[in-house]
Image (cartoon, rainbow, N blue to C red; front, side, top):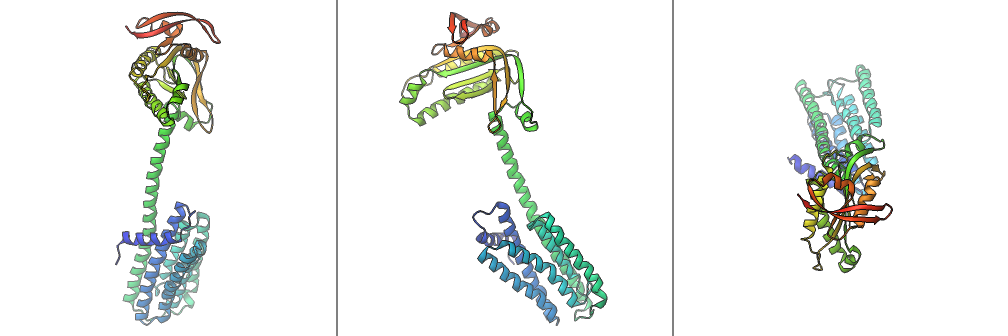
Length: 412
Protein backbone atom coordinates (compact mmCIF):
# COMPACT_ATOMS: atom_id res chain seq x y z
CA UNK A 1 0.00 0.00 0.00
CA UNK A 2 1.48 3.40 -0.98
CA UNK A 3 2.46 5.79 1.80
CA UNK A 4 0.47 8.92 2.40
CA UNK A 5 3.24 11.38 1.36
CA UNK A 6 3.64 9.57 -1.99
CA UNK A 7 -0.13 9.49 -2.39
CA UNK A 8 -0.36 13.23 -1.77
CA UNK A 9 2.42 13.89 -4.29
CA UNK A 10 0.63 11.72 -6.85
CA UNK A 11 -2.75 13.39 -6.43
CA UNK A 12 -1.16 16.83 -6.36
CA UNK A 13 0.54 16.01 -9.66
CA UNK A 14 -2.74 14.80 -11.13
CA UNK A 15 -4.54 17.96 -9.99
CA UNK A 16 -1.73 20.09 -11.39
CA UNK A 17 -2.35 18.62 -14.83
CA UNK A 18 -5.88 20.02 -14.83
CA UNK A 19 -5.05 23.33 -13.16
CA UNK A 20 -5.41 26.42 -15.28
CA UNK A 21 -2.68 29.01 -15.57
CA UNK A 22 -4.85 31.56 -13.76
CA UNK A 23 -5.95 29.27 -10.91
CA UNK A 24 -5.49 30.71 -7.43
CA UNK A 25 -3.59 28.79 -4.77
CA UNK A 26 -6.91 28.05 -3.05
CA UNK A 27 -8.42 26.57 -6.21
CA UNK A 28 -5.34 24.44 -6.83
CA UNK A 29 -5.61 23.15 -3.27
CA UNK A 30 -9.29 22.33 -3.74
CA UNK A 31 -8.61 20.41 -6.95
CA UNK A 32 -5.79 18.46 -5.32
CA UNK A 33 -7.87 17.53 -2.31
CA UNK A 34 -11.01 16.65 -4.29
CA UNK A 35 -9.06 14.35 -6.61
CA UNK A 36 -7.47 12.75 -3.53
CA UNK A 37 -10.79 12.13 -1.80
CA UNK A 38 -12.51 10.91 -4.98
CA UNK A 39 -9.68 8.44 -5.51
CA UNK A 40 -9.82 7.19 -1.91
CA UNK A 41 -13.59 6.72 -1.96
CA UNK A 42 -13.37 4.92 -5.33
CA UNK A 43 -10.81 2.48 -3.90
CA UNK A 44 -13.01 1.89 -0.84
CA UNK A 45 -16.05 1.40 -3.09
CA UNK A 46 -14.24 -1.37 -5.02
CA UNK A 47 -13.36 -3.15 -1.77
CA UNK A 48 -16.93 -2.83 -0.43
CA UNK A 49 -18.45 -3.99 -3.72
CA UNK A 50 -16.25 -7.08 -3.97
CA UNK A 51 -17.01 -8.08 -0.40
CA UNK A 52 -20.76 -7.75 -1.04
CA UNK A 53 -20.36 -9.89 -4.16
CA UNK A 54 -18.44 -12.47 -2.15
CA UNK A 55 -21.49 -12.86 0.13
CA UNK A 56 -23.90 -13.14 -2.77
CA UNK A 57 -25.24 -9.55 -2.60
CA UNK A 58 -24.71 -8.84 -6.29
CA UNK A 59 -27.12 -5.90 -6.55
CA UNK A 60 -25.72 -4.30 -3.41
CA UNK A 61 -22.15 -4.89 -4.62
CA UNK A 62 -22.94 -3.35 -7.99
CA UNK A 63 -23.79 0.02 -6.41
CA UNK A 64 -20.32 0.81 -4.94
CA UNK A 65 -18.62 -0.78 -7.96
CA UNK A 66 -20.71 1.45 -10.21
CA UNK A 67 -19.68 4.43 -8.10
CA UNK A 68 -16.01 3.48 -8.50
CA UNK A 69 -16.42 3.19 -12.28
CA UNK A 70 -18.39 6.43 -12.67
CA UNK A 71 -16.03 8.31 -10.34
CA UNK A 72 -12.97 7.09 -12.26
CA UNK A 73 -14.53 8.18 -15.57
CA UNK A 74 -15.43 11.49 -13.95
CA UNK A 75 -11.83 12.03 -12.85
CA UNK A 76 -10.51 11.25 -16.33
CA UNK A 77 -13.02 13.63 -17.93
CA UNK A 78 -12.02 16.30 -15.46
CA UNK A 79 -8.33 15.82 -16.30
CA UNK A 80 -9.11 15.97 -20.01
CA UNK A 81 -11.49 18.94 -20.03
CA UNK A 82 -10.71 20.83 -16.81
CA UNK A 83 -14.46 21.18 -16.08
CA UNK A 84 -14.01 21.51 -12.36
CA UNK A 85 -17.53 22.68 -11.46
CA UNK A 86 -19.15 19.69 -13.15
CA UNK A 87 -16.62 17.34 -11.57
CA UNK A 88 -17.24 18.83 -8.14
CA UNK A 89 -21.05 18.68 -8.40
CA UNK A 90 -21.13 15.11 -9.73
CA UNK A 91 -18.82 13.86 -6.99
CA UNK A 92 -20.91 15.48 -4.26
CA UNK A 93 -24.13 14.17 -5.80
CA UNK A 94 -22.87 10.58 -6.20
CA UNK A 95 -21.62 10.32 -2.64
CA UNK A 96 -24.92 11.77 -1.40
CA UNK A 97 -27.28 9.43 -3.30
CA UNK A 98 -25.52 6.08 -3.73
CA UNK A 99 -25.07 5.21 -0.02
CA UNK A 100 -28.81 5.84 0.45
CA UNK A 101 -29.64 3.45 -2.43
CA UNK A 102 -27.26 0.87 -1.00
CA UNK A 103 -28.98 1.10 2.34
CA UNK A 104 -32.37 0.44 0.69
CA UNK A 105 -31.05 -2.60 -1.18
CA UNK A 106 -29.44 -4.10 1.95
CA UNK A 107 -32.61 -3.80 4.02
CA UNK A 108 -32.48 -0.67 6.11
CA UNK A 109 -30.22 1.20 8.47
CA UNK A 110 -29.11 -1.69 10.69
CA UNK A 111 -28.85 -4.40 8.01
CA UNK A 112 -26.76 -2.03 5.83
CA UNK A 113 -24.38 -1.31 8.74
CA UNK A 114 -25.33 2.40 8.63
CA UNK A 115 -23.86 2.71 5.15
CA UNK A 116 -25.92 5.87 4.63
CA UNK A 117 -23.42 7.63 6.89
CA UNK A 118 -21.14 7.83 3.85
CA UNK A 119 -23.50 10.53 2.57
CA UNK A 120 -22.23 12.93 5.28
CA UNK A 121 -19.10 13.33 3.16
CA UNK A 122 -21.23 15.22 0.62
CA UNK A 123 -22.05 18.27 2.82
CA UNK A 124 -18.56 18.12 4.35
CA UNK A 125 -17.13 18.24 0.84
CA UNK A 126 -19.43 21.12 -0.08
CA UNK A 127 -18.20 23.01 2.97
CA UNK A 128 -14.62 22.58 1.79
CA UNK A 129 -15.01 22.83 -1.98
CA UNK A 130 -17.99 25.15 -2.53
CA UNK A 131 -18.93 27.65 0.17
CA UNK A 132 -20.67 27.78 3.52
CA UNK A 133 -24.07 28.87 2.12
CA UNK A 134 -24.33 26.10 -0.47
CA UNK A 135 -22.94 23.56 1.99
CA UNK A 136 -26.09 24.03 4.11
CA UNK A 137 -28.26 22.92 1.18
CA UNK A 138 -26.17 19.79 0.77
CA UNK A 139 -26.43 19.18 4.51
CA UNK A 140 -30.22 19.61 4.48
CA UNK A 141 -30.34 17.13 1.58
CA UNK A 142 -28.36 14.67 3.69
CA UNK A 143 -30.75 15.18 6.61
CA UNK A 144 -33.68 14.68 4.25
CA UNK A 145 -32.28 11.31 3.14
CA UNK A 146 -31.65 10.38 6.74
CA UNK A 147 -35.28 11.14 7.65
CA UNK A 148 -36.50 9.35 4.53
CA UNK A 149 -34.50 6.31 5.61
CA UNK A 150 -36.48 6.21 8.84
CA UNK A 151 -39.80 6.67 7.05
CA UNK A 152 -39.06 3.87 4.55
CA UNK A 153 -37.67 1.45 7.10
CA UNK A 154 -41.06 -0.39 7.73
CA UNK A 155 -41.51 -0.94 3.98
CA UNK A 156 -38.01 -2.24 3.23
CA UNK A 157 -37.20 -5.93 2.82
CA UNK A 158 -34.96 -6.55 5.83
CA UNK A 159 -33.45 -9.87 4.74
CA UNK A 160 -30.06 -10.15 3.05
CA UNK A 161 -27.23 -12.67 2.78
CA UNK A 162 -25.07 -10.96 5.42
CA UNK A 163 -24.85 -12.68 8.80
CA UNK A 164 -24.65 -10.64 12.05
CA UNK A 165 -20.85 -10.92 12.17
CA UNK A 166 -20.50 -9.50 8.65
CA UNK A 167 -22.99 -6.71 9.45
CA UNK A 168 -20.92 -5.87 12.54
CA UNK A 169 -17.77 -5.98 10.42
CA UNK A 170 -19.27 -3.46 7.99
CA UNK A 171 -20.38 -1.25 10.88
CA UNK A 172 -16.74 -1.05 11.96
CA UNK A 173 -15.54 -0.58 8.38
CA UNK A 174 -18.09 2.13 7.53
CA UNK A 175 -17.50 4.15 10.67
CA UNK A 176 -13.74 3.71 10.43
CA UNK A 177 -13.49 4.63 6.74
CA UNK A 178 -15.75 7.66 7.08
CA UNK A 179 -13.81 8.80 10.15
CA UNK A 180 -10.51 8.36 8.30
CA UNK A 181 -11.61 10.37 5.27
CA UNK A 182 -13.14 13.09 7.46
CA UNK A 183 -9.95 13.24 9.52
CA UNK A 184 -7.87 13.32 6.34
CA UNK A 185 -9.82 16.33 5.07
CA UNK A 186 -9.44 18.19 8.37
CA UNK A 187 -5.78 17.20 8.71
CA UNK A 188 -4.96 18.39 5.21
CA UNK A 189 -6.66 21.71 5.70
CA UNK A 190 -5.21 22.25 9.17
CA UNK A 191 -1.77 21.65 7.70
CA UNK A 192 -2.47 24.09 4.88
CA UNK A 193 -3.98 26.59 7.33
CA UNK A 194 -0.89 26.42 9.55
CA UNK A 195 1.31 26.92 6.50
CA UNK A 196 -0.87 29.85 5.42
CA UNK A 197 -0.63 31.48 8.84
CA UNK A 198 3.14 30.99 8.90
CA UNK A 199 3.40 32.66 5.51
CA UNK A 200 1.00 35.37 6.67
CA UNK A 201 3.14 35.96 9.76
CA UNK A 202 6.24 36.31 7.58
CA UNK A 203 4.43 38.76 5.28
CA UNK A 204 3.15 40.74 8.28
CA UNK A 205 6.69 40.97 9.63
CA UNK A 206 7.87 42.18 6.23
CA UNK A 207 5.07 44.76 6.19
CA UNK A 208 6.01 45.87 9.71
CA UNK A 209 9.63 46.32 8.66
CA UNK A 210 8.63 48.21 5.53
CA UNK A 211 6.29 50.45 7.54
CA UNK A 212 9.05 51.16 10.07
CA UNK A 213 11.35 52.05 7.19
CA UNK A 214 8.86 54.72 6.17
CA UNK A 215 7.50 55.89 9.53
CA UNK A 216 8.95 56.30 13.02
CA UNK A 217 8.29 53.38 15.34
CA UNK A 218 6.15 55.63 17.56
CA UNK A 219 3.95 56.69 14.63
CA UNK A 220 3.47 53.37 12.79
CA UNK A 221 1.18 51.75 15.44
CA UNK A 222 -1.00 54.87 15.57
CA UNK A 223 -1.42 54.85 11.80
CA UNK A 224 -2.36 51.15 11.80
CA UNK A 225 -4.96 51.47 14.56
CA UNK A 226 -6.49 54.85 13.70
CA UNK A 227 -7.65 56.74 10.64
CA UNK A 228 -7.32 60.17 12.27
CA UNK A 229 -4.90 62.81 11.06
CA UNK A 230 -1.56 62.47 12.81
CA UNK A 231 -0.16 65.92 13.61
CA UNK A 232 1.81 67.12 16.65
CA UNK A 233 3.53 70.30 17.77
CA UNK A 234 7.06 69.83 19.12
CA UNK A 235 8.31 72.88 20.96
CA UNK A 236 12.01 72.07 20.91
CA UNK A 237 13.75 70.00 18.24
CA UNK A 238 16.88 70.22 16.14
CA UNK A 239 16.97 69.69 12.38
CA UNK A 240 19.99 68.77 10.24
CA UNK A 241 20.36 69.03 6.47
CA UNK A 242 23.33 67.57 4.59
CA UNK A 243 23.98 68.02 0.89
CA UNK A 244 26.71 66.91 -1.54
CA UNK A 245 28.75 69.78 -2.93
CA UNK A 246 28.98 69.72 -6.75
CA UNK A 247 26.50 66.89 -7.14
CA UNK A 248 25.40 67.83 -10.69
CA UNK A 249 28.87 67.69 -12.30
CA UNK A 250 29.63 64.59 -10.24
CA UNK A 251 26.52 62.82 -11.58
CA UNK A 252 27.75 63.54 -15.12
CA UNK A 253 31.22 62.26 -14.35
CA UNK A 254 30.06 58.95 -12.81
CA UNK A 255 27.95 56.19 -14.30
CA UNK A 256 24.41 55.82 -12.90
CA UNK A 257 25.43 52.64 -11.07
CA UNK A 258 28.50 54.28 -9.55
CA UNK A 259 26.41 57.29 -8.48
CA UNK A 260 23.74 55.18 -6.79
CA UNK A 261 26.29 52.91 -5.09
CA UNK A 262 28.20 55.93 -3.77
CA UNK A 263 25.10 57.61 -2.32
CA UNK A 264 23.89 54.31 -0.91
CA UNK A 265 27.19 53.76 0.87
CA UNK A 266 27.23 57.26 2.36
CA UNK A 267 23.55 57.40 3.34
CA UNK A 268 23.70 53.91 4.85
CA UNK A 269 26.45 55.18 7.14
CA UNK A 270 24.34 58.24 7.94
CA UNK A 271 21.43 55.93 8.80
CA UNK A 272 23.65 54.10 11.28
CA UNK A 273 24.58 57.42 12.88
CA UNK A 274 20.88 58.33 13.05
CA UNK A 275 20.23 55.23 15.14
CA UNK A 276 23.34 55.81 17.25
CA UNK A 277 22.19 59.30 18.24
CA UNK A 278 18.47 58.42 18.66
CA UNK A 279 17.49 60.75 15.85
CA UNK A 280 14.85 60.26 13.16
CA UNK A 281 15.58 60.26 9.44
CA UNK A 282 12.94 62.30 7.64
CA UNK A 283 13.87 61.82 4.02
CA UNK A 284 16.49 61.83 1.29
CA UNK A 285 15.91 63.80 -1.90
CA UNK A 286 18.61 63.13 -4.44
CA UNK A 287 21.85 64.00 -2.65
CA UNK A 288 20.11 65.78 0.23
CA UNK A 289 19.77 64.10 3.66
CA UNK A 290 17.42 65.37 6.39
CA UNK A 291 17.27 64.20 10.00
CA UNK A 292 15.62 65.47 13.20
CA UNK A 293 16.19 64.97 16.93
CA UNK A 294 13.49 65.63 19.53
CA UNK A 295 10.58 64.36 17.41
CA UNK A 296 8.63 62.17 17.50
CA UNK A 297 10.58 61.07 20.62
CA UNK A 298 11.20 63.90 23.07
CA UNK A 299 14.93 64.36 23.65
CA UNK A 300 16.23 67.00 26.09
CA UNK A 301 19.70 67.11 24.48
CA UNK A 302 18.47 67.09 20.87
CA UNK A 303 20.90 69.80 19.77
CA UNK A 304 23.87 68.04 21.36
CA UNK A 305 22.94 64.76 19.70
CA UNK A 306 22.79 66.21 16.20
CA UNK A 307 25.93 68.25 16.79
CA UNK A 308 27.84 65.05 17.58
CA UNK A 309 26.24 63.32 14.63
CA UNK A 310 27.24 66.15 12.27
CA UNK A 311 30.86 65.96 13.45
CA UNK A 312 30.87 62.20 12.84
CA UNK A 313 29.41 62.77 9.38
CA UNK A 314 32.13 65.23 8.43
CA UNK A 315 34.85 62.91 9.77
CA UNK A 316 33.45 60.03 7.73
CA UNK A 317 33.01 62.06 4.54
CA UNK A 318 36.64 63.20 4.70
CA UNK A 319 37.66 59.54 4.36
CA UNK A 320 35.40 58.74 1.37
CA UNK A 321 36.55 58.95 -2.23
CA UNK A 322 34.26 58.77 -5.22
CA UNK A 323 35.05 56.32 -8.08
CA UNK A 324 36.79 59.14 -9.96
CA UNK A 325 39.34 59.40 -7.14
CA UNK A 326 38.13 62.71 -5.68
CA UNK A 327 37.04 63.20 -2.09
CA UNK A 328 33.41 64.01 -1.41
CA UNK A 329 32.41 67.26 0.24
CA UNK A 330 29.18 67.90 2.13
CA UNK A 331 27.61 71.08 3.42
CA UNK A 332 25.74 70.57 6.67
CA UNK A 333 23.28 72.99 8.23
CA UNK A 334 21.69 72.74 11.68
CA UNK A 335 18.99 74.75 13.42
CA UNK A 336 16.74 74.33 16.48
CA UNK A 337 13.22 75.42 17.33
CA UNK A 338 9.55 74.40 17.26
CA UNK A 339 8.07 72.32 14.42
CA UNK A 340 4.82 70.67 13.41
CA UNK A 341 5.24 67.00 12.61
CA UNK A 342 2.76 64.60 11.03
CA UNK A 343 1.95 61.98 8.42
CA UNK A 344 0.83 62.99 4.95
CA UNK A 345 -0.37 60.92 2.02
CA UNK A 346 -2.67 57.93 1.63
CA UNK A 347 -1.17 55.73 -1.06
CA UNK A 348 2.40 56.44 0.10
CA UNK A 349 2.81 57.58 3.69
CA UNK A 350 5.45 60.06 4.70
CA UNK A 351 6.37 61.43 8.10
CA UNK A 352 7.43 65.05 7.68
CA UNK A 353 8.08 68.23 9.68
CA UNK A 354 7.27 71.85 8.91
CA UNK A 355 8.04 75.19 10.42
CA UNK A 356 10.38 78.16 10.38
CA UNK A 357 13.04 76.15 12.21
CA UNK A 358 13.08 73.68 9.31
CA UNK A 359 13.43 76.45 6.72
CA UNK A 360 16.31 78.03 8.61
CA UNK A 361 18.10 74.68 8.93
CA UNK A 362 17.81 74.26 5.16
CA UNK A 363 19.20 77.78 4.65
CA UNK A 364 22.10 77.02 7.02
CA UNK A 365 23.06 74.18 4.70
CA UNK A 366 22.55 75.98 1.37
CA UNK A 367 24.45 79.09 2.58
CA UNK A 368 27.22 77.02 4.16
CA UNK A 369 30.67 76.07 2.94
CA UNK A 370 32.00 72.69 1.70
CA UNK A 371 33.15 70.47 4.53
CA UNK A 372 31.65 72.79 7.17
CA UNK A 373 28.78 72.56 9.66
CA UNK A 374 26.90 75.84 9.86
CA UNK A 375 24.46 76.51 12.70
CA UNK A 376 22.03 79.28 13.62
CA UNK A 377 21.79 81.20 16.87
CA UNK A 378 19.16 78.96 18.48
CA UNK A 379 21.38 75.90 18.12
CA UNK A 380 24.48 77.85 19.14
CA UNK A 381 22.85 78.94 22.42
CA UNK A 382 22.00 75.32 23.23
CA UNK A 383 25.46 73.82 22.58
CA UNK A 384 27.99 76.64 23.05
CA UNK A 385 29.11 75.43 26.50
CA UNK A 386 30.02 71.95 25.23
CA UNK A 387 31.20 72.49 21.64
CA UNK A 388 33.72 74.69 19.85
CA UNK A 389 31.79 77.08 17.61
CA UNK A 390 33.62 79.64 15.43
CA UNK A 391 31.67 82.80 14.75
CA UNK A 392 31.23 83.23 10.99
CA UNK A 393 29.40 86.50 11.07
CA UNK A 394 26.14 87.90 9.79
CA UNK A 395 24.88 86.56 6.48
CA UNK A 396 22.11 87.69 4.21
CA UNK A 397 19.95 84.55 4.24
CA UNK A 398 17.49 84.12 1.39
CA UNK A 399 13.96 84.66 2.63
CA UNK A 400 15.14 85.43 6.19
CA UNK A 401 17.30 88.53 5.90
CA UNK A 402 20.30 89.16 8.14
CA UNK A 403 21.19 86.20 10.39
CA UNK A 404 24.12 85.51 12.68
CA UNK A 405 25.81 82.14 12.03
CA UNK A 406 28.56 79.92 13.45
CA UNK A 407 30.64 76.96 12.27
CA UNK A 408 30.55 73.94 14.53
CA UNK A 409 34.12 72.63 14.75
CA UNK A 410 34.40 70.14 17.60
CA UNK A 411 33.63 68.99 21.13
CA UNK A 412 35.10 70.86 24.08
